[in-house]
Length: 88
Image (cartoon, rainbow, N blue to C red):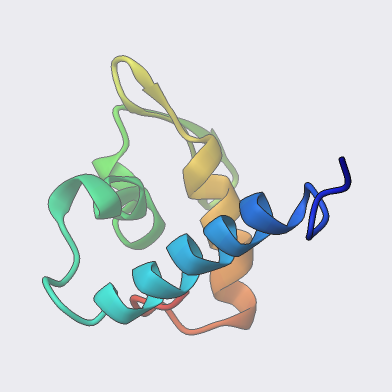
């Protein structure tokens, strides 16, 4: 028996629906503390739990005692090109 549509169509439509429904909700409730947790060391270098001093720069290594700073590093690069906002 032949299917009336390809097998990849339903998962693809579901993913797109989820993505665009999420885009509609971004402006709604605003940003929460746990979503912005990584940004403290970007603007206040002493906010990191542990950082490495290299010349005049402080490089965050741990945001908290159990959270590394990888997301902080990734967003630091992103914010070089895009202004920080809820969309970035």
